[in-house]
Length: 244
Image (cartoon, one colour):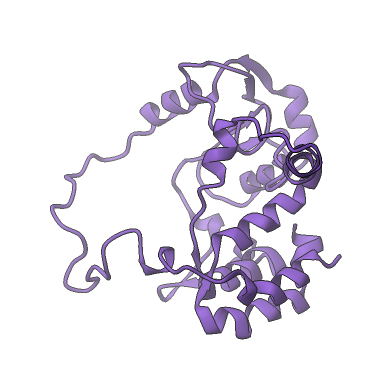
């Protein structure tokens, strides 16, 4: 996704008229981009079955959930695409600033639970593995089977698939996988045990949102979720996204 769909020209278009005019990225535009990453699985089977054969699509709970998208604030999306994909600035100490504070992941001293899935095409697991080399503090890496939806949404009650853990962390992810232990079932059980071992300090839940300095903006989910954006207004961005 970074190499094909995030280059300076395409990101500059997202920074331009479309997002500035609406201030919102519609959920169907974002969803379409992700579908094109696995077009053979997420687009063409439905074209053949629904349109060419006249069949009804099969019920699929995960894809039904996946289709329930939400709009995104346009400026946030453009900023995220530029800094997290195009320029990869989160990995560079001091390159990003949040609320007046420079970001350096290497200075974090809290434990980190880093999870990836073996067949994830959005965040390849070897890319997720690199996070172990970036953050400070103790790190726990777990690799789940399947992709970025079925691999993550794997309830312990079902106890499906498997996961890998306890490998030796090195610069290269392949030796880690060779040394890791394969565990049957859901990774949620491992995650729950890890959370219980790293509970942190218990604090009372706030009785109301915000404070004198940071007042609540508006009720959830936020105004950017509600606009009904006309599809035709996103045609220029769509043509751009399809270029390779």
